[in-house]
Every structure is written in C-alpha cells, then in structure tokens.
Image 1: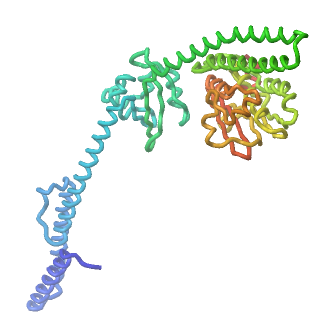
Image 2 (image 1 turned 90 degrees about the horizontal axis):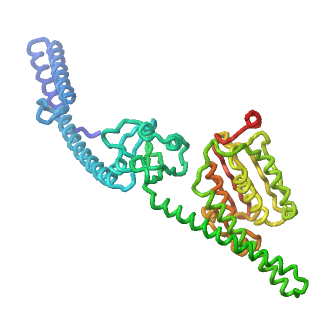
Image 3 (image 1 turned 180 degrees about the vertical axis):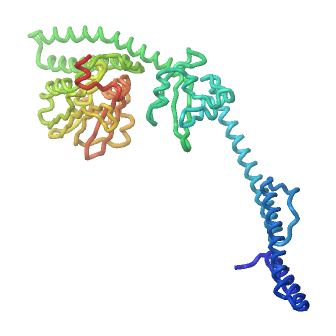
Length: 439
C-alpha cells in the first residue's frame, strides 16, 4: 500500500524525535524513561489535535475556523474542504434542478397535488388553487379530504390503485367539471391530478342528446316500414323473387332497428352512475338460467356449462344487468365455432367482489384488438359480425352498464386458446341470500 506524503512526513518526524529522545536518554543514563515520556507527550499532543478537529467539524467545518494542523491532520482538513466544496456544488445543482421542476410544475394547466400516505398535502401547484382551492402554503400539511368534502372523492381517494378517473364538480366553480386521477410515486407518496374537462363533458352530452334524438326519430319510420313489409308479405299475389327481396329488406330493417335500440340504450347508460342504494336486489343465478333457455336454438352445437353461487345477489338495475350479461353470453355463442366450450361463472374474487365471466375455448382475439373491443361499432372481423347479426354495440353496452354499477369490464384472450370476458363489481353491491331475504 502506497503511503501518502503527509503520512511519510509524520512518520519521519516521529522517528526523528524518537531517536533524539533515545540518544538523550542514553546520555543521561535513563533511555527507557525518556522514551516513555516522549510517547506520552506525543499521544497527548495527538489527542489534543484530534479534539480540535472534532470540535471544528462539529461547529460546521468553516474554512476560516480550521485549527492549525500538520501532517495527517492537515490532509484531513484539506479533504474536508474539498468535500464541502463538492457538496456545495451538488446542492446548488439540486437546488437549481428543483427550482426548474417547481417552475414547470407550477405552470402546468392541470392541478397537481403531492400527497403523503395519509393524504396530507405536501406540495401543490398554482392550478390547484384555481381548480381545487388548495393554497400551496396555507394548506400544506392539511388532509385533502378535509378540504374537498365530496363523498365520491373521498371514496376514490381511498380506493385501490389503478382506479379509473373520477368526475367531480369544481370546488371553486361548480359549473366546471374536473377529472381526477391519482398516481403512486416514490415511497408512500401519491400525486393527484385534476383536469378541467368541462368542454369534453359538454361535447359528450351534446353527442348523447343528438344520438338519442336521431334514434327516436328513426324508430317511428322503421316501425312504419316494418308494418308495410308485413302487409306486402301477406299478399298472395307476390312472386318468389319479390318475396325474397322483401325478406332481405325485412332483415336489414330489423338490423337497423336493433342498432337504433342499442343506441338509445347506450345514451341512457353512458356517464350516469347508479347510486349504491339505487335499483333492486337482482337474483343473478335465476337471471343466468333465464338467459340460457332462449339460446338453445342457436347454441345447440355449443357446450355451455354454468357455475354460479345461488346465494350471491346484486343490487342494481335488473334490465341493465340482463342486457350486459346476455350480450356477453350471446357473443360467445355467435362468434365461436360449433363444438366450442363456453363457461358462465357467477362468484366472487379473492377480495369478495362479485364477478360475472363468460369464457370460451374458441379462436381467440389478437392482442391489438383487445383495447378497442368495447368501442362503438368496432369489429374484429366486419363480415363475420354482420353475418352473425351483431350491431357492433354489444360490448359498448356491456362496458357502460358495468361502469354505471361501479364495475369494470376486463377482456383477456389468446389466439388459438380462447377468450375470457369478466365484469367485476364493487363488493358493496353484493347481497347475500340471507340479507336479501330480510329486506
């Protein structure tokens, strides 16, 4: 190991002093006493020097207050000076980076609030004051659920990570609508982001009204057309070719009417959350049994099995749940080949949340389609969907019916293996048979 110059100098100085004391001790006839006195004095001097260094370091290690040093202690002082200079540079760099981040974050148009694990406010930007009435200085350390007293917001705040965004009225301007999301970041920290989506909501409402109005307007002429078609078909003078044409018109008229009915249903479901106490207790087991019977004609070549918990019931809208559940089941029959095994399950997951799933061992769906399956009119295979009689709105209805009940539609599929469509509801909507009987 290579010795530093200061250590070599210190050793040389100690050795020279030791030799000098030893020679003097021999001259006086007591070399041992001289060596002991010398070593005692050196240790005492060394301790005093170390104490001075410790006191200087404890006081903040200011360069102007450094003790007089030699040898190793002088090198220690120089190393401390060097580290403090580097530390100052690093702090200045971090301070500059933090100032840039705070400046950028403060200028974000979306309200951004950093929360602790206990939902205490650690930091907020300027937009948080404008949108949420959260002051960056005044409200620091306050619990955010004490400042924003909206029951849905409190529930959202304590919900599982990954929950979808929540729409709430603006605490500052009630005519505004805010979309709130939360993201876990760092250790025991969350970031709450709120964006003004008033314009988006207005456009959505305008679209819903437009679709509902157009659908209502189309329903009457379609009914009239269907009535005249039935009258024409009853005419015994019609030739075979004309009857075939009337059959095609009837099929397309019925298909258009189905689209209109589905659009009307979607306009009612979309964006309207059903309250926890709204609806009735739905016996899902009986509902599933009633869905199977009408499918016997088209599902004769499929192997449908049912696994249900008869004691598990659900609080909600029976017609909407029937529509969602039946859509998943009929889709499994329509879009799989004869001989496909289909399983319908109604149970709870490991967290006690009710779930309805329909799985099959059919051809499966490529991953690139999965995220768009619940979009309106999206089709994996347009020609096959039309041949099967689908409108392209079934999964959109399922998705919005699930969301209206606080549920989530999950789709997983592997080409060549099969697909699983699952609706998971909040545990708060589950009703056991015993509790339902007491209501």
